Image (cartoon, rainbow, N blue to C red; front, side, top):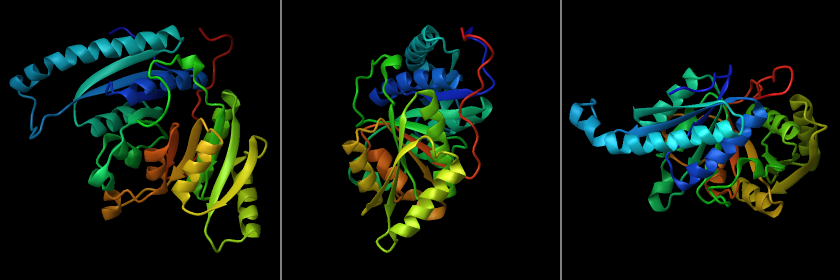
Length: 303
């Protein structure tokens, strides 16, 4: 299809046409607009069980799904264009997480936006969803919208409110990079930034105050952070409770990569927050190196 010219860097929106994905569309368009990024929308026709190769019979069985997907993808691109966001789509078949990650590399994605689904029972003990796999392996930040998040899926992108950002920090390199991303977004939206740390029982307030000071200095975020909050208790539960109390519109946090058997268990604070959040969560994985989300705007008004 003909699409507007792609910017140097891109926001990748992964859609499966579920309710969370519908809400993700509006957030992706808003973020692409304020960050001056083009938008690439990807949908993956999932490989059938026992898939080994795309035989003619397999392709024919996917034709009805392909037709529906093309209509939906075209609608998303038109909506983005209506908001002056250059957009294109890609429809591929295969394993969703592999296609999403590969596409993110190909389009030099600065950010991935996607919906996530709730799970219950034993399923919650396994990192089996597409979003989980992308979060573990993506080389750029991932903006997730959970099934439990409030709001109507057809909300107008410009009416989305991201005006209060809660940054949960453990003072790790990932958390410091996450704070810098939050400050970057806050300047563009604009938004208020609050910094939260859930401390261990044996950590002293003096030690934590010094860590706050160092984090603000390292991230160059001092002038944008309105409040520094210290809580004690279970980290994920405390983050979720405070986000609800302060009516946060976005939670931002860093997370460390996991290896081996740890990757099969939902043990990380970030995963628990994503699963329970009533607002979107921006996750920065394996931080240490900060790269701007936004692409510098060209001189003059943007058309």
